[in-house]
Length: 321
Image (cartoon, rainbow, N blue to C red; front, side, top):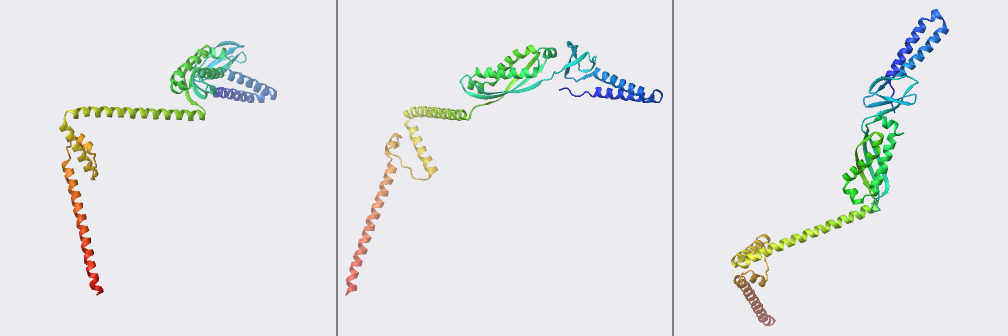
């Protein structure tokens, strides 16, 4: 809607006050009848002059019609029209205009209902065609954008809408531009703001994404184990022809285990033989020594118990006597 023109109001007030002052100055000579006539005449003149002077802002174009026919475009700035014979039919805003539009419960190509919100950036490049070729160019652009959005959704899958928004934006811009260029309108860009899908489908997609992540994790874990096995195989081939290196490696493993845990490490004899640790004579001797010591302690303990028992039996008869 066009804002009130302060210039028209100022010109009307000035002319009407001048008329009142002139009529009042002639009142004493002409009488009341002429005073009213002059005042009424100045009121009409002020209205006509004020209506003739128009003011357009920097971003506006005025479409002027003379007796119903197109005369031309005026503005920006001050311009004059002929009252009654000429009228300003439209004030066209030539700035970039944003229009938001939606498509609710629209089925995609794979029959998924979605709600899509988008924003259209456009401007009038030919005010004459925008005023004469279409009744209401703003409403026409809005409806054209909405129908184009529904058309694009119907031709696209849900995955394409979620992943390839830039492609959909360009496609929408092309369709809307083809429809609106006949009205003197240029579409700068179209941007899809949001794509809303049903909650049930969101849960299913979340489960699908979780399963896909788990599958990838297992694949990565299996590949890692394969790589580790290959490295062990390479190491085995290296130790196969170098018993000394295998022996040193085995000793280092035992040393590291004892150093970190500070506890006894039980290793099967077959593993020790595989590591070329020999007969582990030291460990076997130590084990036998410990066993012998345990046996000696057990025998000494039994002997001591028997001696104590004999002494006790000998003392009992003496006491009874």
